[in-house]
Length: 491
Image 1 (tube, helix red, strand yellow):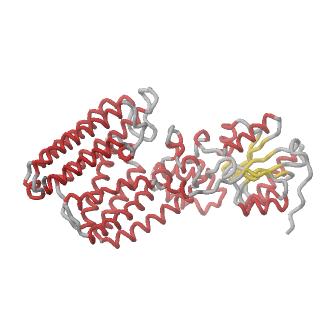
Image 2 (cartoon, helix red, strand yellow; image 1 turned 45 degrees about the horizontal axis):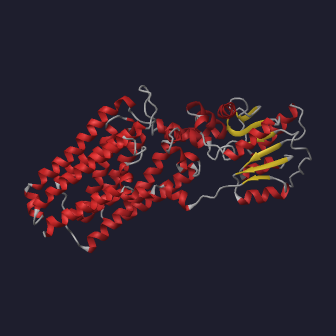
Image 3 (tube, helix red, strand yellow; image 1 turned 180 degrees about the vertical axis):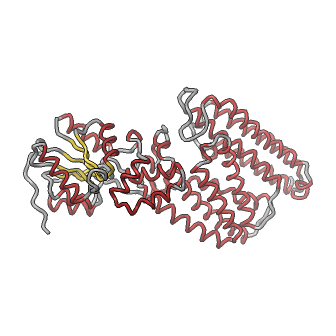
């Protein structure tokens, strides 16, 4: 059917109806609501499935009754919002018209304070999902009731082509090239707010490729065992890639579940998911693909390693869903995940894992996990009664956490000193006395990173990522490597 020709009207006189999901915000409030519900309890996913037979309008109504995103924390297409503010200042009527639940639409409209009215899906009133032709009919009726014979519409998707067909003026925001091309056949003068393409750099930021460096811990058992077997190193390299893919997938899940807290954070709000640079469906699909690839590689290494990777995945997801909000439990889990990487490296390579190495890693990584929490708390406002977003700590906990963290770091050095005089050390090293030089070097590094945390020089950054950019940390690593070499071969 050929769409009717657009009405001829002055844009200044016609009201502008604005779509919400994908247009006003690059995100989708339905997806945001579903994530909020699942974040409360994973079993809420079953409730979402149970609501599907209710139809689109009924599903949205039930979901919005349980969870709705905070409009103040949603990402917005700022150039387009500024355009709306300018139009509002000129006196143009603006109406937020969306297929989202009417309560969500009303809350967003109230928050932005530029809309004169709003239209949304109201299952209790009429049971109609306000999209495509239904939206066009609702806009026609709304405009006519207010004496407007012509109206304009701003949208972003192929579903909006039906709505644009009846509009006097068209505005495309963040629309795919194919949609813009179709729109311009009926509205050659359509105003277009360009869609920013998804770049490889943005994807790599979302999967936190730089965090793969943590998986270098898988090589520690080989180094500690002084193994030079190419076959074993190849196995651990495959394990490294598998762990990286799995970790990236769980980082995406963590960021999806932590969207409200990340958006309230001064630095984390710029992450691809929090800013809306990557959509929720894209992130979910990417996480699933990486997780499947990770376990394919894991089974290629060994069944034992695949079980270790499964333990890591389950623990990480439990951390993202629940454990990260439990004070002290969260840092114990984080330190355990670091140590688990070392154990996984031992399983992948088939070398024996030293209990001394496990003890040192547990205390050292507990210290670093507490560094991370202290750095985050240092970034908070000086309000002693407010919880850190998404965490179980208050700023007043800083002194206790510092004491725990520094003590844990010193215990790691103590275990190293005890190891030097142990039977294991004398069996593995030709000149174990050289290892005494490593103790003060490690002690200095631990004291220095805690000093920098107290000076707020980490800015809430992960301590291992800070160390990768810190020349002194690299120098410390080289010195420790030289000491280990001297203890092995002597001079």
